[in-house]
Image (cartoon, rainbow, N blue to C red):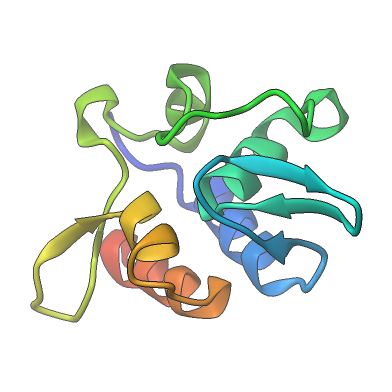
Length: 115
């Protein structure tokens, strides 16, 4: 499957928009201060729009439907380049374990898919 660069750019734009508070361990966690999103939760929000249920998603990967929407291979498991010629790392690990900012993850998406 060929990556859909226009849709991937929408994900990058959403990550940089400032509209999403960053969280971890789930695609979205609802707190008393509002929802907090993993980078993959932001991708699901771009894909699903208002149909996205903030309190529902506990997945550590993007849904098969969202992967198809973005033109990502089902087996890809959303691996991103950590540096220009660096190793690949799972997006959720960059978000949750490495504590990368949304902006840094957006840079990795651009690097990986040559946006």
